[in-house]
Length: 317
Image (cartoon, rainbow, N blue to C red):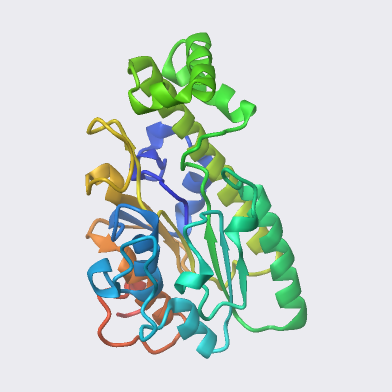
């Protein structure tokens, strides 16, 4: 999961974006869903839908103090019942185990203990590598791993190397650098009421963070491959929501259901898939729970809002 990742900033859909070379090269044996929609415009209800296969109107997790319903099993609980070992690694502090996101999970990396204001991918990936080594060294039980990155989410802080790569695409580099410095040191006014120079600089920072996310995904795949998990894995790369970049006058998310906020990338690698398949039918994040269960050969509970997408990977729905 990549937080606040717009679908149109993924090279898979717009090659001219040139922000995610790893992901673009990696989809040759994946299902690419062109019209995937998050179930909410902000993190908590969106991830709750992914974990339960239900829309927010049914799971009820629509506020920061909401809890996942105790009578509704999560994907981790359903898989753990079948013998899976589940680990959750989230850079987003809103995903709290106390709210139910830790049910069925043997290890939950507490985001409150990570570097603030925003944990970087390297911190989580180091923990994942260590956890996988421990799990696979002690047991051959199958693994369910949930990773929630925050690179494209505010506050922006891309590396100097990545930012230097991005800035020439957005205009006068020196002017952009000066504006970015101003945003960092006198940010309140220019973030809340940005002029055109500030808007351009913010878009450049966002693009740089998307490139950082691509680097993080590359390292994630390398870790999974190192531990021998890729060959027979179901791998899903998506976003909890998109991000408004002044398309409708505002920066951020959670305030509306505009296309740029709820339309998200969705790329799925099914076990044994050898060719790319593009799907233009609309799909939702609620579809990922039944998809995962069917691919694992497990019973899909009745009454879910989501439907399995496993047919794209060669399995019948």
